[in-house]
Amino acid sequence: MGAAFARSFNQNQPVDIVAGLEGYAELLHDPSILVTGLPFSVTLILILLVHELGHYLTCRHYNIDASPPFFLPFPAPIGTFGAFIRIRAPIYSRRKLFDVAAAGPIAGFVVLVPALFAGVIWSKVIPGAAESGELVFGVPLIVRLFEQLVFPGVSSSDIYLHPVARAAWVGVLATALNLLPIGQLDGGHIIYSFLGERTRFLSRALVVLLIPIGLLYS
Image (cartoon, rainbow, N blue to C red):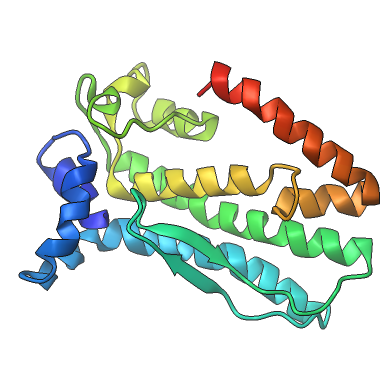
């Protein structure tokens, strides 16, 4: 998928998901195309890895039994289903639960910010580029902030993001999803460290609330 993003960017063409999936077949004939996908893939893997290492190293600090990070490869539009660690022991302290849960998003965010800024610098202006093609990326506030710093006065719809910026965008999405105060997400653990069992009701209420939000702001 990284190679597909790179090819589309170099050719000033919209992101083509079908072409990206066909790239898996192309690997059989020309494995070297993977090299072109490294800027996207290495950036994304690094963000995911540091996020999980934030959890893992905090567990080690508190002597909580946890596995090293596992990655979930999958032929999805972003090339992965993310990563996770397995915590093998219960966490009885709310302080420790908060620290373990918060360490991942903080660590991952620290890495993705410079990657995003560099990626936006390497991006280019092509009228309508961001709103064409099969895959249209939204514009989180931090992405818009960096776009205005690098391309003042240019509309987000006219900025074609470099693959590195695309990878950082995925990192922003993963961080935001993880911080939803629901269930076993990092945000769910964080809110549980404050509210305890009352989190069950809050999580269910927020899931219901997400439905109209998704319909109105999809």
